[in-house]
Amino acid sequence: MSSCLVVNKTDTQNRESNNDWRLFLRLIPYARNRGRLLTLSILLLLPIIAVANAVQPLLIGQAISLIRQEGTTYEFLINLPLLEGLGFLQALLLGTVIIRLLLIGFQGYLVQKIGQYITAEIRQDLFNHVTSLAVSYFDRTPIGKLITRLTSDVEVLGEVFATGAIGIVSDLFSMLVIIGFMFSIQWQMALLLLLMLVPISGVIIYFQKQYRQANYKAREELSALNSQLEENIVGINIVQLFRREKFNYQLFRKTNQKYVRELDLTIFYDSAVSATIEWVALVAIAAVLWIGASLLLQQNLSFGVLSAFIFYAQRLFQPLQKFAENFTVIQSGFTAIERVTNILDEPIEIRDRANPIFSIYDSQFGYIDEIVANIESNRNQQIGEIRFENVWFAYKGGDYVIKDLDFIIRPGEKIALVGPTGAGKSTVIRLLCRLYEPTKGKILIDGVDIREVPQAELRSYLAVILQDGFLFAGDVKSNIALGDGYTIEEVKQAAEKTNVASFLEQLPKGYDTQLREKGTNLSSGQKQLLAFARAAIRNGQILVLDEATASLDVGTEALVQQALEQLLRHRTAIIIAHRLSTIRNVDRIFVLKYGELIEQGSHEQLLQQGGLYAMLNNLQMLGT
Image 1 (tube, rainbow, N blue to C red):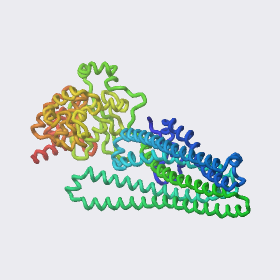
Image 2 (image 1 turned 135 degrees about the horizontal axis):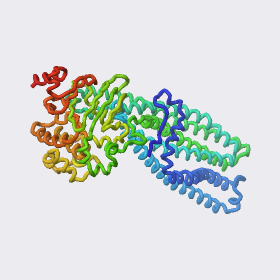
Image 3 (image 1 turned 90 degrees about the vertical axis):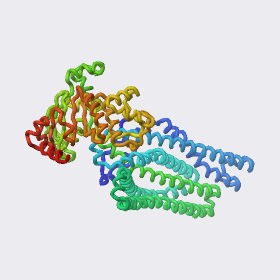
Image 4 (image 1 turned 180 degrees about the vertical axis):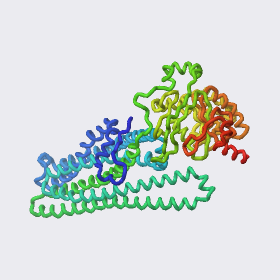
């Protein structure tokens, strides 16, 4: 389902100028998916509950009037014997109590169920959107902030619609029914109670606005708190090695204190609303007794009607109290909607075109199913050309880290990228994989602009082995297949191709060995071996190696190098290497400096030129 939560604002300065109810309406499409449950909880149950609640004071007042034989007693009750009339009223009262309790319980179950459905759907949309964002978004956004939005903020959204919105509708309807009953039996006192609602409503609105502002700041501080927590857990090795425990504790303590201060304000404004309503409710009952007593002495009011109004005064402010509580939930929800929609408003910078080329293979050789069936013959047609045409790229603003790159890598050619730290080597790989879009220029594979190819197709065409292979929690085979539906036989074949099968079979449960988050129960070298198996099973036409053997010992590296020779055969390859001794046999070496291609040629040619490559090579030779 596409995202339904979209707002036009992205900062705190213009938050208050937006219509809160427009924010709330963003949840309507989610609720519409649960229309039957929503209709049942509102249209069928709500009127019955409201009437059952409002009729109870009237029945009590009639019972008192019947006992005192007052003129306000209904005629059909006067014609009955006293005990029979009282028994009838008791039975009605008991019936309304039972009906109300049963329906309130059932309605509570339904609204909570609706809330959980809404929460789950919003969470799914948010997760889908977040995982579709460009890598550049995650470069500038703390992970803890995203986790807060995906968890606690989304939970609040479910409460907004289920408990808050439906609760407010229920409370308003209940108040209207009570007011209607009051006007039907004594309009003067009903008008008095109604007029008392006007100033209390203004007070509630004021406190709710203050609560909204405090709640927004509190949730921002909670995001900062989660970000610090996540950063310290991920970087626990550095924290402990450099003895930053006390320093980080003080940083966390300050953020925690800010969060508590903002949270205290939300508690104060929430409590202020409840206390104000309690005080006004007592004043209302006192006013009913005072005016009711005057009317009673003037014989313009009966004891039964006065008793009913005392109960109505209590019942009128009970839903108002609940209304204020639910309105607080709504205000918290508006804050959560703002925060969640700020993420959902983030544009997906890297999108597939409306009518993309289905496959790079497809652009040259026909339908993809035919190509898959004859992939070896296609390889003989020399595919895998990479072309950078005047490519510029900046992570931020006009600070270019790639400057006017213009080169061609021929099909089957092995190219190495070298240069000092910050030269832009890894950025070239990210641009090729379309994790980032070029600021200017274009990148073509086999003559096709990579922006014309679906991202999934492009990345299946590439086999990438990074220096730091990330592993997911799960078993070994799922970390090789990565959800692509490969069979265990295919997984084993990929492991054998890369000479890592012997290592995997030595694990406690072989391919079924469970790995912890980030593969912490494996060494860096072992994790890297799994990365080679991942690349082999995907059979990509272009192989990208980013210092792929740096974590391996000498013996294992020798085995992997043998496997690499097989992988590199008939494939175009781009190799990032810091150890220049490992790339002497490549076809060409590209030397980058400050994002520019300053030298290119074979190892011997570059040494003869005596440029930057020759200097780097001499420095490494001296180091050995």
